[in-house]
Image (cartoon, rainbow, N blue to C red; front, side, top):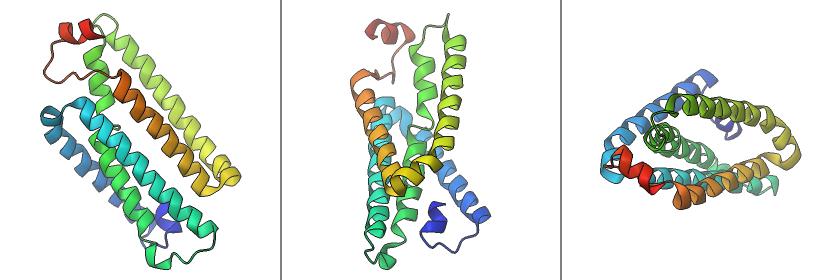
Length: 177
């Protein structure tokens, strides 16, 4: 929908392939950076990058609602969305599973990951079902701004509560939690 609303002439199938390639490249970059930069840093950079991308997309959408001529900048939502996918693949789409497996005690790890994955899928389904309702109520700009606020809250949570696990043993990680 973002590609279409920006006036992109790409067919939906090609847009989906572009999105997949961006995520693949971002995930590869994550594997290169995770041991160098650390998990917490990548999670924070990812969350802040996603938030900024969403703010840019919301601003562009709001300018369209206000009937400003954005024709020279209709590439901005596609670029912001592509950047958001790329930077999300660095951290928030990939690293939570690694961090969770590193901070949970071995006795409860498999059960806790199963419960957390179930909650993730439930929240994902809920978000997908609510997006059309939110967009109809708040407009695209309000919906994207809401998700930017959620991402900012996630960044604050990461900064305050998520421990750095890079290079630490399970005992050292569990001792600091």
